Length: 176
Image (cartoon, rainbow, N blue to C red; front, side, top):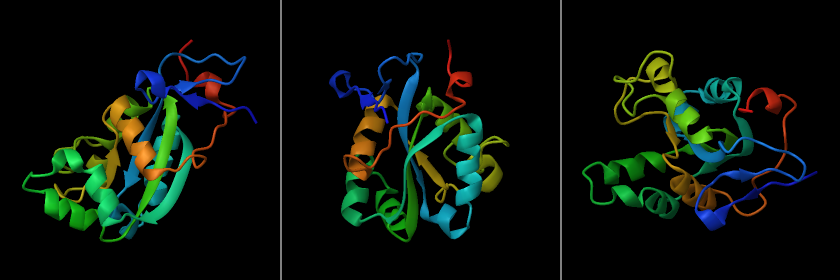
């Protein structure tokens, strides 16, 4: 099986295609976490279905209890904010599904599918808009930039845990 490589040297989570394959410059990877509320409410299949139907590919997937240490590293940018302690408590309260998704403009596409942060403000048709109403328990996390994706993927996935493959419909999902 041919492998892709992440172009870490330029600080993005964009994919380099295997030799002989050309993709648009929009190919990216992103981290998605289905938070404890999504797992507890049995929404995992519904949420994954939305990402896959849009054309994103699962490159890594695991069910895990996020440790406090990992949650602190992941949410470091929010340290000192009023919601930080409750966010850590929530994220370590039960299992989460952790995914590496890839595809054309994966970060932007995933964030649009998720909707606004607060479920009560999210548009109908988005994950949060259709499945959530809370401002604290918002079902899903997605990387907000290529730099965040690179950092977050490295935090949650060890080398070799993200698979490299091409789906049969990939040619229909990329810009030419």
